[in-house]
Length: 491
Image: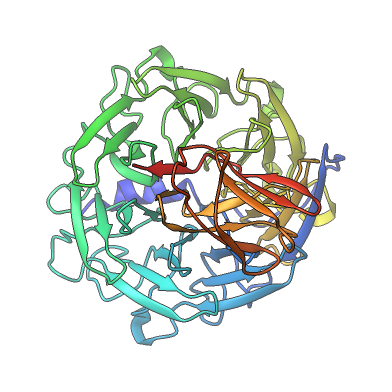
């Protein structure tokens, strides 16, 4: 096993201590602390962003806290009402899992799927689980890692979330396990729990310590590895592509430019924009992290290098990726940097906005409220809710230094999302948003669809004959709402 490498990876996600504000700075935008976690309802939400369910509420995990201090699954409304759905380690020896390190994904069946770093019945370091949990908190373990053999050939220590493929299966990675090299795996798991290992990370030349996957428009998956790759100037990690059948291709090796000007150590995942390019962040490299664009032919452009301002007031070390909002700009967080300082004179992190041409604006400096009431060290990224606002989490800060859940308002307008974001003609799709009662029209790229209004937040629609890939629009009494991403019609 390679505990040192895994500990190095996880160490990037563990802040120092609690936070005490030493400076006050007025936020550039309106940030509202929805909840200060107190330990009993969870503590220390780590790498996973929140996910908005089709009911309009947000769902997430905390790495610690809850009834057994091994983490929780929770639901939170837009006005800040938090409900703990499940506390991990409620079973003997934590066979139900412990310490969910990342967030959840909602499947087309309406349930949420996720992973835990520890727990289960495995024998290897970390072990961990894959689980399904319903919106009311009924949890089912789908797989316990490292339970089959001493080499942990099925993987161990999943520190990334899952993504649902076009085939209805879920895909993910483990940071360790996979046999002799212990460098992690890529796996597929069916909703019934059948797990298939698609790729073993070998000696490191194709990367190791993988982060999460994303589904590309081609139906293939793209991901990053924090280390490995053997770029000309160091082992700075990689971007890779893998098919649902397991064909693996290294798309880019970081530290391919002198002084690692292209960045090093991508911790967060990727997103794909309408132009076909992929966008993400690196934790290290030139400066203290970067934001990059990568074309589908492997050409990387560094859009922004952090810590270019004195004392890193522009932020440093983004642990999560970026999200693309309805205005076409990219939004994200940095763990450190900014204009305020916390315990031990450490900086507290930022929220930023980046235009496609690389212009960065700091929207909020954490620890800008007394005793860090607004939070500190945001390891998780942001998610834009259908009300137009952004929602996120901090690892520390709040009234008891157990972390916060916050809302950031920037003036962007409401929109709609779909679940899933792809489908064949005739497929049933949930279109969800706000104030949908009285909707009079649903169209897929201009083609009218048959639909039923299920609630004020959800519409069930059928992908219409003649529809092609494009935006979904809903006409409501309050106006026309447009989807944030293009719905992909599968031919």
